[in-house]
Amino acid sequence: MSRSLLIGKFSKPAAALPRSLPFPELSPSTSAVTPTTAAETQAQLTNLSTLLENYIKKSPLTITPKELLRFFKCRLRHHPTLSHLDFHLFRYAATLDSFRHDHTTFEYMVRSLISTNRIDCLPALVEFISCNPCPCADGIFSCSEIEPIFRVCISAFCKTRRFDDALHAFDTMKRLIDGKPDVALYNIVIHGLIKHREMDKGVDFYRKMIGDRVKPDTTTFNILISGYCKNNQFMMAVEMFREMKEKGCSPNVVSFNTLIKGFFQDGKANEAIGIAREMIELKCEFSYVTCEILVDGLCRMGKVMEATDLMIEFMSKGVLPQDFEQFSLIEMLRNTRNTERALEFMNELWDKGYTPTLIACTTLIEGLRMSGRIGKAADLLRKMIDKGIIPDNVTFSCVVEDMCSVGETLEANKLRTLASKKGFCPDGMMLRILISGCIRECRRKEGEILVNEMLDKGFIPNLATYNMFMKGLAKSVG
View 1 (cartoon, helix red, strand yellow):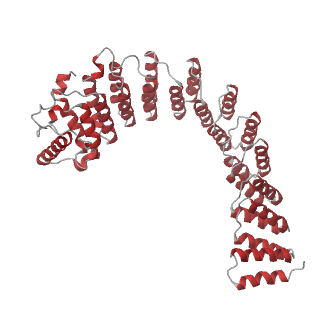
View 2 (cartoon, one colour):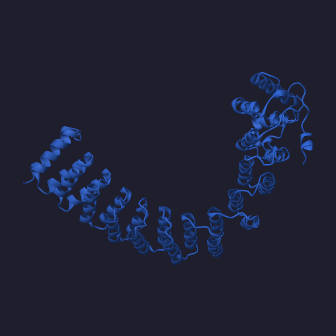
View 3 (cartoon, rainbow, N blue to C red):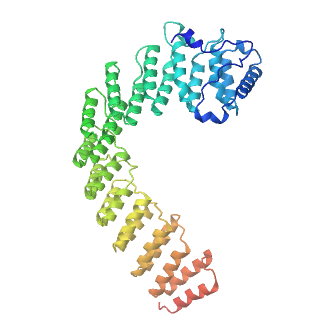
């Protein structure tokens, strides 16, 4: 479409904004302010004309792109009833003989239409930009801002599944820019097609990219590999992974993670583990996501012990990430009654310089308690305190109660004292448990010290409670 034909759609101005200018189509998102009668339309146009003249303090016939952009940003954009008329004013300005839009007004209008969900108007704007080049392109080179502007348009079309418009905008942009489009633009289209289940079209566009002699990057292949995996075409994903290497692209952690996850979806645990080991050989840095995918995939297949062995192997090779969350693996070992193996794994973490998380330690303590390994639960709690990992009151109270029930009240109290030095604040329930243990073990002296501590901290609500404790201790021998 030529400039003269497109501009012919707009009315020629008089001294101010023409009241009879056709009202632009508006999207449903602006229906609340769309006029329903000719009188309302004329009233809004009159208000817009007045607002513009008052802002620029001169005739609209002599407005410049810089002034129009400032009016858009500072005044019209925030107006409660006229903000939707920005495209109307944009088109009107194009009819002025002394005015010519540049890339700043193009960019503003594109972003405005997208942010206000007026995508229906975007194809017309794309066509207008193609027919009315930016003044920057008057020389031998094109405007450098055209490609970023079209990138925003293409992305918006892909997100709203308007792929015909996206492809048309892409072809239009290719004619307007110098050289080849950036690979990121191809990636946007490929990702949009694959995300909305147009896998074949996405692959076709990738082939078109190769035909245009644009070298794909790692992101391109990651999108395609992920698309094949989501469509259960795992062999094609492997082929694309091989093609990635043939094209000279180095796989990154996202590439490997996607492929590992795909193998688990296909029930091929050995192949997934093989890919993880290939990462180590290629010195591709592991991420905590990689480990989570491996642990989750193996555990879902009932291979909890294999997952544990694999994480220990990664630790021994020094590739296990420090931020790896051990909770899921510890929980699975606990749920499958492998608390001894979970404890071994926890000790491996300590020995290799990894710091287990509080929730992982708490989960393991609970598993040891439930399996009757009270001594090991207490040892783990003591180790946590030594390393500065302070447990919550509930977990601590449960361990203390278990220790008191097997005649280790003094050891439990020592553990409580050690934790208090590291910032732990015992509650009244824990002190009650310790006093009850002292009564059972006939430790009157230690029990009275605990009662006085409760009294000092305000944990004894009344005299009856105090007398109950002291009477119980008085019956003790010791």
